[in-house]
Length: 341
Ligand code: SAH
Ligand code: SF4
Image 1: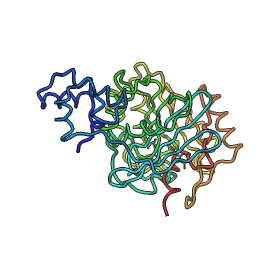
Image 2 (image 1 turned 90 degrees about the horizontal axis):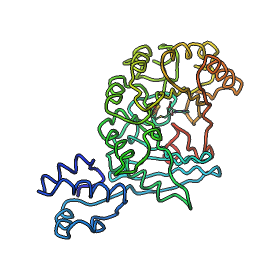
Image 3 (image 1 turned 45 degrees about the horizontal axis):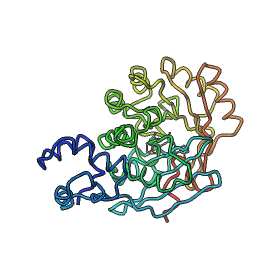
Image 4 (image 1 turned 90 degrees about the vertical axis):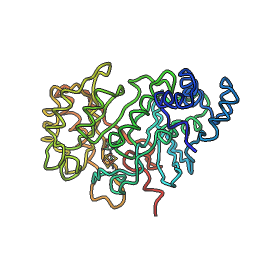
């Protein structure tokens, strides 16, 4: 059985051609699947019974199986989904003021091998399909209470989104499509470890916000903690960001995980400010979340304060991203681990 949630609008146009159906059927089906959240082909009542029966011979609508939901007292919810091949992925709903942000995984595991990241240390299984990406949104909708609505979506869970380029591009299109989930483009953010050619391509083809995990200010340190830097060193990455087309997006988000004694000195803060010159950006400082088995330590609170001060004094908008859902290990880079062993 093929899953209709794996089909972009364009894919459905192709499929309708194969079935000898009119192109407008593609829009109907796309809307049923993503906007009207149909759970079965039988619900698509404006499509003839005869065609529905033909579709049902080979197609169905299937979601991810949610195995576990954990709630934190601050309103954060983390859920674990099992996929058809029994891979497991995690997603997080983060409540912050009047925002409710859904953090989705783009891959089962991650091949980038960042040394400070629990997902990276666990290795790579595979890319997620469009159905599995969108499935996390459908699962999150099921968890909403009362008047709650998901306001933002970030691709910051497990995996490197730009290493799953095609499915992720389809997914961001489904997220922002008026026929799909209808999120505003500036409420969706994709975070990458810095795959330079894919960033360039996404600048042309994508239409959501970009966040880049920089995490170090010298190649020496970045090589050590982010192997991707050996392929695309800092200056190459910065050059790409300087020419990144922003369109309606106003800035790039620079993520910087502060690791105690490794990348949190005054000199790092000043170098960071210099590196980011001529890049329209906002800086997110993320104190490293310690996890068992990791050789790294979180930064001292006064280091965070000082680092923040220096970068801010250099003229940037800087926020310190506080860890939400600490008691359920919902922090970035800490997903999945708690279920293993
Ligand atoms: N692969 C993408 C998106 C997922 S990681 C990327 O790397 O950008 C999302 C964010 O979590 C990244 O900015 C990463 O640097 C950060 N992160 C990973 N492990 C962390 C940890 N232990 N503590 C704090 N932040 C972490
Ligand atoms: Fe992968 Fe991002 Fe973790 Fe690096 S930080 S291993 S790219 S998920």
